[in-house]
Each structure stands twice: as structure tokens, then as C-alpha cells.
Image (tube, rainbow, N blue to C red; front, side):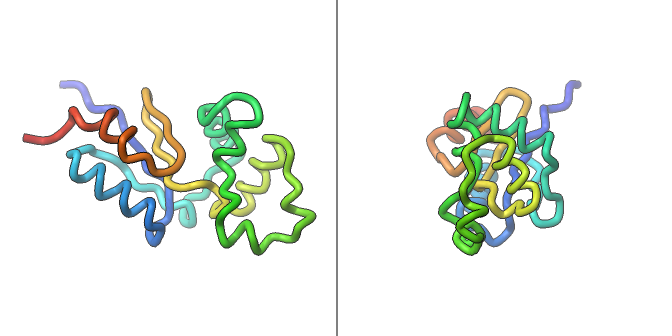
Amino acid sequence: MSERPVTRLYGIKNCDSCRKAMKLLNDLGTDYEFVDLRESPPGIETLNRWAEKAGTGRTGWQLLLNRRSRTWKQLDESVRQIDNQEDACQLMEQNPLLVKRPVLEAADFFAVGLNPGQLKSRFGNQKKR
């Protein structure tokens, strides 16, 4: 009997989008592991991998960097002058709450942010009977 691939949901416990994603995954019967970004912050290699998976070129790291967060708004304006993946990933490594949430990662799936339609499409066929 083969094991199902691990799906990981990275986020923070009090994030509304993360809670909605967890509820949806639970409703769909999806086995997943929750990884709290505060307790287990991603390293630079993980952040670079996520930025590359999120999109090509500037798009990937821009999707991953949460510029709408309170943490972002509290940064000095000079720090917020990010224009490349390397600097963005270094900043997210130092401030893991700058990662847009939730991040879902599986062997054959990757998503940044909450998209219920995308989750239902990918995980909907796993509903437990």
C-alpha cells in the first residue's frame, strides 16, 4: 500500500485565509500537515523554491511577498524598495509573516493565497466516503 504524498499548508493559526483553507481541505477530506510560519520559518532555499513555483520572472516573488500585511506596512520605506527575488526572499526569511498566506505545497501542486476553486479542483476527488 503506497502512502499518499504529503500536502503541507504553511501559514499562521490566526490568519483568516489559512483557517478557511484548512476548513476547505478538511471538508474535502484532504490529509495535510499545517506548518506555522512563526514556529518553523522557511529558509532561503525554500523561499526561492516557492518564488520560482509561484511564477516566472518578477511575478513569482511578487506573488509570494505580502505587501498588504501589517508587517509590510510597519517596515521602513527604504526596506520596502524591493525589486528582485534575492532581496525579497532575504526579507521574507527575516520576517516570515511577509509570506502571502496560505502557501500549499504538494509533489504535484503549489499555490499561494486562498483560491477555493483551485483547491476544490485539485483536492475535491479525495473526499472520504
